[in-house]
Image (cartoon, rainbow, N blue to C red; front, side):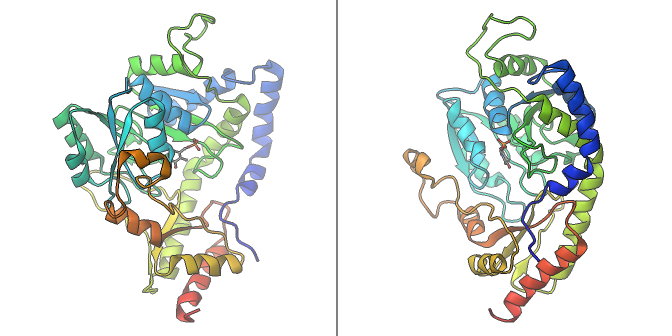
Length: 375
Ligand SMILES: *Cc1c(COP(=O)(O)O)cnc(C)c1O
């Protein structure tokens, strides 16, 4: 039996009656982008995250670009980012005309290395962009300490971090502003692209609201205060997300349950390292967006699982500092040892609320068999 890496189908079907009800309202209103349903979703996310402002946009890549621009980042500025992350964490910095300055990662959390941040700060540094990857937050206490010491902004790529809190503060609100992605595979997924900017800063929020609709103030069309973007959330996506939001906490709990099962089944395997949650003084909660293992002979394992009908996803096969588009920045291979090693050893296993315990057992068994049999 095939087990795919991602399957949103079941939960969408389960929630379809609710979604349909919301869609009817949209068709009646005839407002399909940035309309009343989007507003309603923004308010629901403000309640969920505790943010003063949740501003919906087309996707989280746009959200990053608009957040950086609204925070005043531009040509001549440097933004410190990890080199082991999704491309948008760095491309967004390039899009506003600034330079991404890459750092290595912490080998346990896969998020930005605190020591490396300190080394990379220059007179041009304007912001640090921590990325919260897979399951746990970056070390926000340390990042905030460094930012305060050097007078830098903290702009979070919290695209994957819905449901993660730091001392009661939702991801994206620990620093100055953050983003959330609702790409279909994310913890809260739409049926297409959608994204959000979160912040408690009134001025930044006002600028974000302008930038998402060509630089116009809401309700005052055809007056352009700056050259903005066209990045609106569709009301259809907002309807889907609104209908799914009430199930988020129970879906996060289901992910944690399945993750714990994987860790139990794989515990005795000497070739596999299951996710480790780093203990910190501050109160944080893991959210298993991705169940990422580190393993020997990663590529062979991936091939073996593929041959046995099991889907996986390699996050991330290459670091960003050696990508062709960043060649002019002059980074050398070998300069980010932890990230470069992670690229050869990590792989994400299937994990979604509708995955069964039997599926988790079957995937684990296949992995154990691969190593035991010396396949
Ligand atoms: C998914 C993701 C993004 C981009 O989100 P989109 O909505 O697909 O544009 C950015 N950063 C990280 C870390 C992500 O995982």
